[in-house]
Image (cartoon, rainbow, N blue to C red; front, side, top):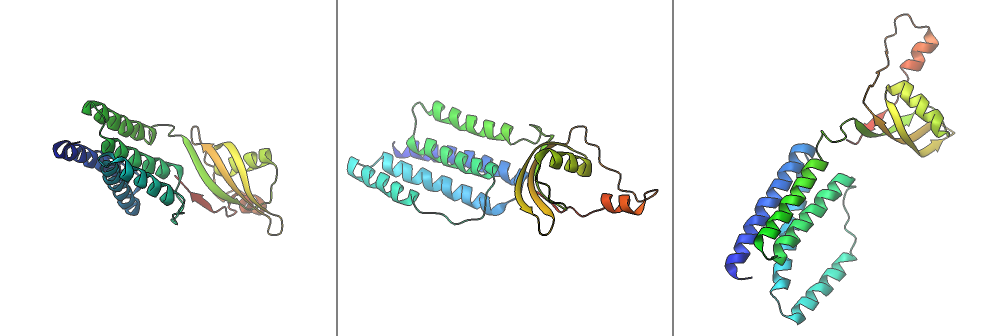
Length: 213
């Protein structure tokens, strides 16, 4: 690519990654990952442009460098699958811009496609009734169906699936990952009025819930 084309695709890349970061920040509020998305996008774009305009020897050395870097384990906080998807989008946009596809309209169209798919798939209006949580249950229950019934009664949601993460028979607790639907949810009445002591204790037993959505 000539310098004019490089400047044009660099501008297109900046606009695309800015839109992706704005989308992520408005929905997930993590500024640290926005920095990561920006840096990894610009870095991939710069290296790809350099390799695309290098001779065969330099390109081979560059690909070897990518191979060495790929075996280094990056230590970071745990990311959920949506954040991994944003990482992949940032990489893909940088690569598309750096390669310099012809015609330019194809490159721009693919960038728009990536942003559109990410925007729609991560929208709160898509599968908005489905949720995921990690729940500590105040009983040791090893049967999946019993867990579904127990948590459904406690939380008032339709429990779709449960995965037992830890079964503590000593302390009588179960750590589970649940997928549930808020559609037609019936939140249990936790009022103490008119309840015998045993029933009141059952309804007000402590279940710590750590939401991941």
